[in-house]
Length: 301
Image: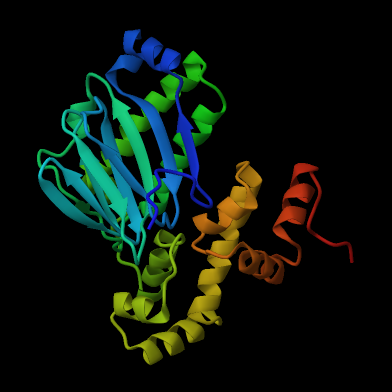
């Protein structure tokens, strides 16, 4: 099987020019913590990267789905969905997607005087499993904010803002308990809890069985209960949430449609377009065209 380091369908990446990195190293604020590269690889089949010499940067790999391997020195670690790992700056490393269940990862290369403060003492995968008060979707939004800011250009203001957001983004991993406890801890009923679970896994293919297991019910009872309360089947509701998220990405990003479909956990762009049209009444392309022109989806009666 071929081994590739990039070129995946739906991928997105930014590499900061060396000149910009050198400027950040000299800046009093930016030199504390800054990004050199970042990206998103969905279902990255045959992904493989090896660095035989230390990179001089920390590498955060956040696996949201699928599986892969990370090797640091002589130790190899298996990574699964809802795990992250930060590879040390001073050691050779290699990582690769699983051959049968390739991972979907967000990744960030970062360095700076304070960078090590966000690195766990032990180099190993750390689990951040969805729960009642997890905020995974917000963490992904922070990644998108970083990406969008840098894509706007490498002005000093943009770089300073990205630096500030990076502190917050890395803190959501390193101080995960505090990050989760910062939101309300009032109990939610079982249906609200599973809707939250759907929102946290908007980029995955959830099955009814997984939803039921999370809610603590049998599959049949869960489907009946959800349908009675929400007046909609669980999978139909989940797809509706996916389309709402797709609308946000069409409205507020310049991602291509075949990138957006991966962001909402749909591998087939043609199926995504059919589902979007079925839900919204128009194609994703037409939706974006109307909104960009300031039009309205509301038809006159």
